[in-house]
Length: 475
Image 1 (cartoon, one colour):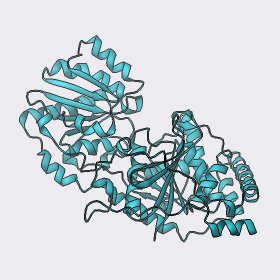
Image 2 (tube, one colour; image 1 turned 180 degrees about the vertical axis):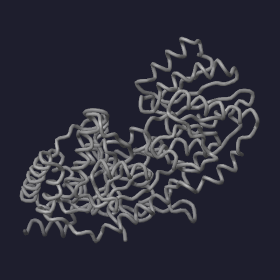
Image 3 (cartoon, helix red, strand yellow; image 1 turned 135 degrees about the horizontal axis):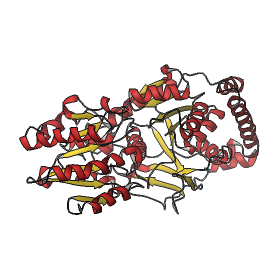
Image 4 (cartoon, rainbow, N blue to C red; image 1 turned 120 degrees about the vertical axis):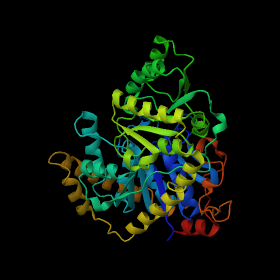
C-alpha cells in the first residue's frame, strides 16, 4: 500500500546534521518506493515558502523563525491553521515527527491526532531523568506520545530510554537503526601519510561529545608519540578549549582544526586518517563510527548508549568515557597501526557496505506505516483519558490543551471548509537511475541535501479545474 507521508522537524536542510540527513535520505527512498512524501520545517533566514529538492521532494518552510537551538517557540495553537491546510492540501494520511527537541514535530503530531490522522515519531537521542532540562523534555515527550500510533528508535538502548521517559508500552516501539550511503563512504588510502599516524575527529564540538576529554588527551598523545597528528573537523562552543590546548602546548603543526565540515566533504577528511575517535558521553547510535569504518579507519569509541550495538567487536575498540580509558584505547590502536595489524580497509568495506543501508531503513519504516493503518482512531474522550494519565497536575493541563485545540480545529473547519482548499495533484513517479536499485540516493551523488538542486521558482499554487471551479461557484 502506498502512503502519503508528512515528515516534520525543526531540523532540516540547509541545516546539516544527523537528523537532517536521516529525514532527507529516508524521504528519498520512500519516494523511490512509490510513496508521497512532503517535509515541513520552519523558515531558515530568507528561505520560506515552498521549495523542491532532488526528485521533487517538496519542502514547506513555514514562516516561523527559530527561537532557541534551531527550534521554534512552542505556541501549540498558532501552527494549527497552516499545518491543517498543508495536511488537507497534500491529502496526508501519516504525520512522521523527528527528534525530541523539535517543537514543530510535537505540535504537528498533536494537530494530526486532532484531525484523526495516524502519527509516527522517531527518537534520535538519549536523555537523562534528573536535570531540569531532561525533566521538562520528558514531560513534553510523555504528552506528545500519549496517543501516538508508533515510535521508532535507532537502537535498543534508545528504545529502553524512550519507553521509560514517555511511560509507554514497549510494544509500540520499534528499533530501526540509522544508515549510511556506501557509495559515498569508501576507503581511499592514497590520501594518507604513510610516515605518520593521523587521528581524526569529526563531530560537533560540544560537551556531550566529550570535547573536554579530547582536550586532555591531545597533549599527552602528542608528547608520547612524536609521529602522531590530530585532524579535527567540526565546530561548536568547546572549540575554544581545543584551540587553547593547541596554543599552550605549541601544537599548531600537529593539531589541525578544520572548522565546520560539509557532509559531502566528510569522506575526504576521514580518508586522510588512520584512527577515528568518538569520545561521546551519551549517544543513541553514532553514525559517524560507521562512516569511519567504511573508510577503513580503526575506531576507538566510548562505551556509552547504543554504541556497543553498532559495530562488530573486532572493528571497534570500546573504552570507558574517561581520559584514562580513551588513552588506553588510543595506545592499542597506535600499536596496531605500527605493527601493521589493521584489518584490510577493502575487506572491512565489503563486509559492512550492506549492513546499514537507507533502502533497508525505508523498507522497515514502510512496514511500520502498514502496521498502523488499521489502528483505531481515538475519540476525543479517549484522547482526554490518555492525556489525563500524564500526571495529577500536568494531565489536567494537557487535557485543557487538547480541548482548546479541538475547538479551534472545528472553528477552522467552519471558517475555512475543506472543499475550498486546493488539492495538490500527484507528482511524477520517481524512478531509480540504476537497474535493481530502489533508492536513488544510493546510486547518485545527491546524498547531501546541500549538494542537491533547489527549485524556488516552481509555483506552489494549484488552480482548480474548470469543473471544480464551476461546482464551487454553484454551491
